[in-house]
Length: 334
Length: 272
Image 1 (tube, one colour):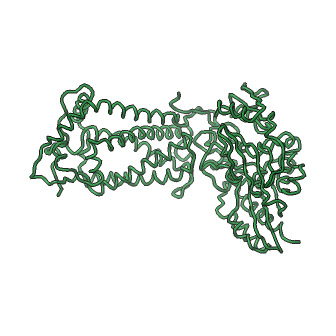
Image 2: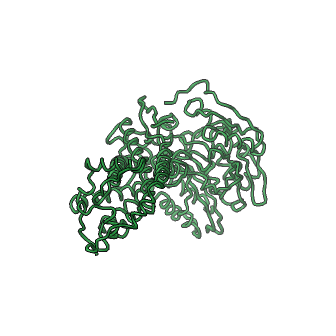
Image 3: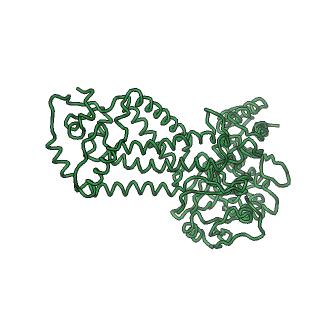
């Protein structure tokens, strides 16, 4: 079991000043290396002595990983860009307000100053059984301690459990899925891009990882296309404490609405599944519809079909249903 | 290198988690080493074998095609073989780095294998002669002679009945490893969500007991890796192909029957 210590165990600290340098170290150490972004997730793990990497690669001194820039087809945000910068950036606020809104709900101002967009996307799950250092499936063991009859699983998933029932805790992920963003991943062999919705990996495919990132790869940046710039957005996060908490459920939507009729839309829900869900069935049904209370209710009902709550998280089903309904209704002309 | 993985559970107990997955590579290497050794030794006797094949005895009084495996046996073997390969692929590839959604394929295939084995047990017990595959003292002697002949030369063992001693041994080794994997696999289905019964992680054992279940499942799996390598190797070896074809077509040629089998131990019961 995890015991919080004042000191963290020894490791070799690398502070490369180029991405190639970081990738070289990561490639050398592979599974025994740890990538340090803002450190908001990292230092909990280290102080709890649950994760004991041999090498820590601090990305803080790599200029190419930071900053927000306008590109031909949209914008590109470096993975090491602090969340506060994402929240305050004029371009993002003007064109992709949903991302600024989502980033603003992350933790506290102090944490947003230090925490990065990449870190928020790549962070590990908050399942306390897993974070306590017990040998659950996600930690390489053969049981999910959060899915036994006595488990405390109020925050866990209602969709897509496969042995592990932990959820993705990211607030920015559903917003980026709604914006049809692309994740730019760099490895020693070069660059590859992955759609935001495919960036996250569920336990059915890889139970020990949350994303497609390999141990020798780094999330370099996030590209957001123009497609949804200036669209009608909706983001809402429900949490236990509004001051500072991870989501119980969050929802993000982007819509193009003309004369009350939905021309196109993207809808995503977080914290209900091991990965942020893109609600494609809801989107299909919503396209071409005139927004109304009735349509919002019907689509929200569709959204929760197949939910399998655990012992203590049945409340997530009506919560998710209501948030989808509000996301759709939120676009209705006043 | 470790043989098993251990961890401390929430109650402070040191428990087994399962085998160390490096054993998969060892099993694969063991299969490869056996294959190379056999290929190297084979060079010493393959010439003699070919000569013997050319001068094989014949008995026109026997049917040209002699039935070795019934359709039911062949269907079982095919289903079992495909299931086994799928189980090994879905069981081990994710452990060595190739990630895909393997769990459902794995347990559904496991159930298909289990059903086929149940069929095989009933079929073999009531409709076939168990004596054909039973290993007796004489088989052990034959096996020793066969090995001595392979390594140092010398006298060949007596012709067997329906199955040579090595094939019987293989069958028993596969039975042991397969049963270990199947029984533990069915128990492990209580630890996953599936439509047959409710998930109940602690129904049968505590963490310590479950550790042994996972270890046995893993040991059965890695032994089957080595056995599968050996089986595939023998199936494609030119001088054994008459046996492979018999598992597909059901019959063997009369000359192969007389050359490889003792008619007194395995009399002809069917053919054309």
